[in-house]
Image (cartoon, rainbow, N blue to C red; front, side, top):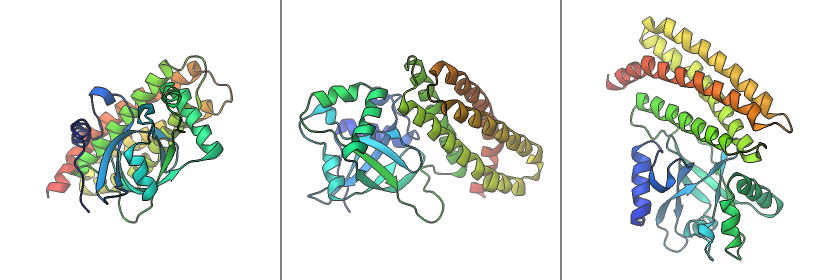
Length: 286
């Protein structure tokens, strides 16, 4: 199936996104960004567009078809209505997803959550008579290992770690702007991070660390340290979940937990990269 050529601005963002594991500068710097590839409703051509997103826990993320408050829906929205099977690149993984256009109270609830996180969405809605759509991108399960966007196992570890670093930086920034009330979307962002870290560390304990131990037995003390750090981080994540569960929690009560998690996780990720990346790169070269 042929691919279209994006406009120069989008192409620059796409190239930078793919070259840097999802990290971009300029207009989108510091934003949660994904690349959404849809199939043209009229042409059948594949179109890739950079789109801002929100975590929604589990296996779906949310995108908003605002088009900056323009009178018409963006082209990518028309495409996914015609063919809801899309491809998502998040800087770490590339996966197929089903695009579900949310309606009624569910759409209104999630749009209100987005507005609470960024009032700019309300400004876009006020500029247009159309109801700005909210779309859930739900990952389609597949067999086999995930489709990493990295070219080697060592690079994959670094790309995953950098994604967690970026998300923690975003969450800290959001806390700084949150005032005295913990918004629903910020709560979701924190809980989604907790789930992602738990799954990542579980996978390392079950697969990556045994592989490294078999290939380099001398790493046993370092791997024991990494497992112990996983337990420590799991305790910090559980404490963060506990604080977030309070109904009227003050962001000032959550931020210290996020800062503590950030400090310990940063140290852990750096040490893990020093220990494991040389082993993984050696395995891929042999």
